[in-house]
Structures are given as structure tokens and as C-alpha cells.
Length: 90
Image (cartoon, rainbow, N blue to C red; front, side, top):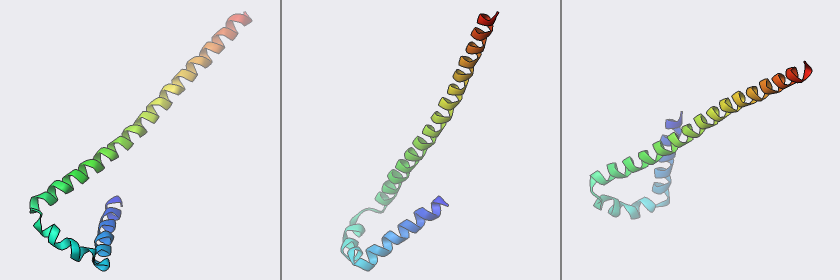
């Protein structure tokens, strides 16, 4: 689904460039750039997207790990309270 949004955004961007006339002014500039530069720019964009994606995933995993550790810590506190209550009640 995300890919569909990306493709739709790119198509909309180029359509806006075409309809506003900006593309006709950019055409000589874009045609003077070597073809392999487009692949380099696409690779840079893709690399940035993947870095952002993995950062978000890493943050989610960190939150899950922190919550699990917090639950273990709270269980230990409860066990310690119960142990102290049993020791003082005897």
C-alpha cells in the first residue's frame, strides 16, 4: 500500500510540474545531466528512505523491549513485597 502512495505522489508531482510549465524550463537542465546520475539520485533517495524505515522499526522494538523489562521489574517488586509481608506476618 505504501508503494502505491509513493508512486501516486511521484506521478502527481510530475503532473504538477507539467501543468504549471515548470517542466518546460527544467527540460534543458534535466537533459544535460548524464543518465547515470538519475540512478545515483534514486539510490540516495532509496537509501534515505530505508534508513528512516529501519530507524522507526528499531524504535518500536526498543519500546517493546523496555515494556517487557518493566513488567519483569514490576513482578520482582511485587514478589519482594509479598516476601516482606510474609516475613513480617510470621
